[in-house]
Length: 191
Figure (cartoon, helix red, strand yellow):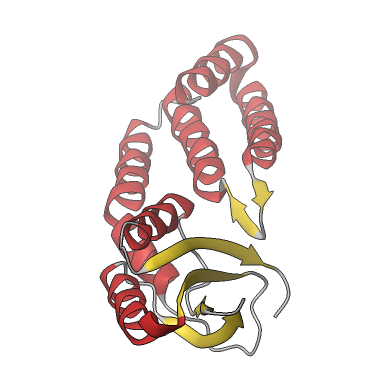
């Protein structure tokens, strides 16, 4: 992206002067904006691809700076992009795990565990420990009768942004217990 933008801006600068380069920079900005919009997706209530789109856009800006012989600005822009993509990632992950202070979120994620009624206390402790181990606090836990001698524990996660692979691993760990009949998780758009 950056190399392409640099080539186009440099070529326009050499062929059409500063006016040509400015026009090409405007085209790069709008063209990369359209590409970035194509990268952004909405999936199960979560918006994905914003970081990728922003990185594409800023990489094109670095290339445009390099093509316009603004090398100091290109280097500075590169450093900012690298810092934002590497140093801020752990902070973003931590923020995404914090519960929202709203009554209802767009998507809630619920972990379900089915066990024998006689094992309710032990399974509840197991579920609580696994949720804590995975840093997914529960905002609500309900227990329902499930058939004649089983119960279903339903733990609604307080965290609105979850990693599906992490929840799959959490459910797999819970399922290995002999106390558990079945465990699974599900996103829900209704409260």
